[in-house]
Amino acid sequence: MVSSQHAQPFTPEPYVKFTHPEWSKNAVIYQVNTRQYSQQGSFAAVTADLPRIKALGADIVWLMPIHPIGEKHRKGTLGSPYSVRDYIGVNPEFGTLADLQALVKRAHQLGMYVLLDWVANHTAWDHPWVTSHPEWYAKDHNGTFRPSPWWDWHDIIELDYDVPALRKEMINAMCYWVEQADIDGFRCDVAGYVPNDFWRQARAALMKRKHVFMLAEWEARDLHEYAFDMTYAWSWNEAMHAIAHGRAHIHAIYKYYSWNERAYPRQAYRMTFVSNHDKNAWDGTQYEQFGDMLEAAIVLSVIGEGMPLIHNGQEAGESKRLAFFEKDLIDWQPHSIGELYQHLIALKKRTPALWNGEYGARMIHIPNSQPDEVLSFVRQQDGQKVLTVLNFSSQRLSVSFDDALAYGQYAEELRSTQISVAQGTSLTLAPWDYHVFVGDAG
Image (cartoon, rainbow, N blue to C red; front, side):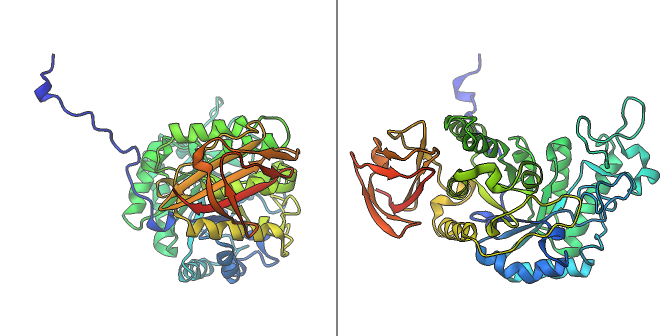
């Protein structure tokens, strides 16, 4: 038996072993598909448009892969940008290294940050490593190069992270872009297909050069411990999509928020989105995915916990599925969706309760009289309170609230009206309606 006087306190350790860049605390991320962004399909065209992206409210520009694309087993005419032929090269389709450097420099002048899309899991079939270092690649049961199993990714072959030399070379390539282009971090493709200890090694090396921001295309708590600032909230999107199409009850999104609050560390950023390049290309436009629930879904993605993502073209109405392997221009036009994003993001930035991760407030579920159709919650911090009410149904409903946390005097953020909420107050919601009320915390 251990004497009580010698027993050590059971002090909890912080799960996340690093700090986020300070600028990320209320940031919003914007995805750029350089090929489809403009007629020129160039870095220069993106650079020229950065002030517009900034005005929308975005801070982080995520560039889809910028590298030369493999030609062997290429898909379509132009190929997938995720079939990388040279990790330290620039796709001439987009411009030169100098053009990329100019883009990053202009972003920094505007108080913005740039992430490169990094494809560590696999390369193109004609990457030089295939001949110079075939031992760096995974092999199938026949001993030959293999695409990722079970997928139709026949234009790529997987790397083998049991090989230390591969790890060193991959990390050197990532550091190259921080040193040569002053980029601010990486969005890492299929991050869970690469061992977590590699990402830990990579972040440690990068942090010696710059306080980077790391986004994982994956949904796993362990990635947050040493390597990634943010992970995808795939299950948020899946739950919302199912609700919009009548395949799931509203409790599907409750399940996500419960999981996010109890299983993930407070410091973890989760990326909430209604569209991205995968969703758009393979599942449909934001309208196909969410129908009449689209605007309510956007509201929740920005006002709820998480860092919102805007996929390029959403703000213009995202009128079509963009071809993935061909040139297919975004149809740019003024649109109400862009105005909605701009308004919501402005509210997020000036309201600390709505900031990201540990910098913002937890969502507190507010029970209401229509629990199967209406989501209501409060986020409050620093003397401010935001009450959000969303009707996830095609029915016109009247709703009241039993929790005193909902009560107070509010300004209706999106309608420029005032409202008083008290016990017995009934709020009428049109089908798929939403309200964002801002008031003082009691």
